[in-house]
Amino acid sequence: MTGPAGPSRIARFAMAVAWSSFLSAGVLELLVFAVVDPGELRWFGAAPVELSSQAVYTLAFLVFWGVIALASSLALLLVNLPTEDARPARRAPGWPR
Image (cartoon, rainbow, N blue to C red; front, side, top):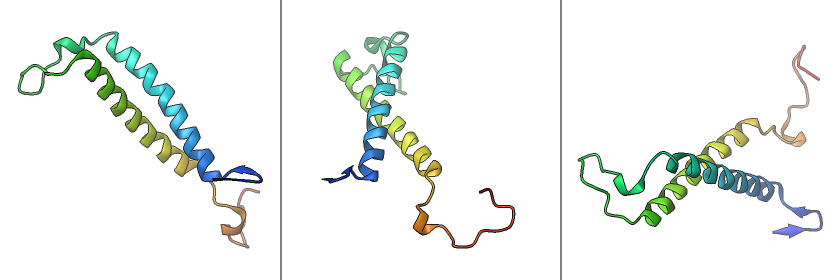
């Protein structure tokens, strides 16, 4: 949804989270599968994973992307300051200006 001023604030935040988590998941995928062979993966009961290497790579990437996107979203939510309208009109003494 773009208006005369461009994408909304939420859309910009969503794009920032999605793109940065996508890149981070790609790097994490490279690091993990440089050490782990998907053909030798086993379930917790020691049964071999019956998926192709490409399926393991894809599922791992999607899981990495989701976890990193969740962490990025939570960090952005915690760092985001309220808008000017939501701030109280009066501040406590000693409040940073």
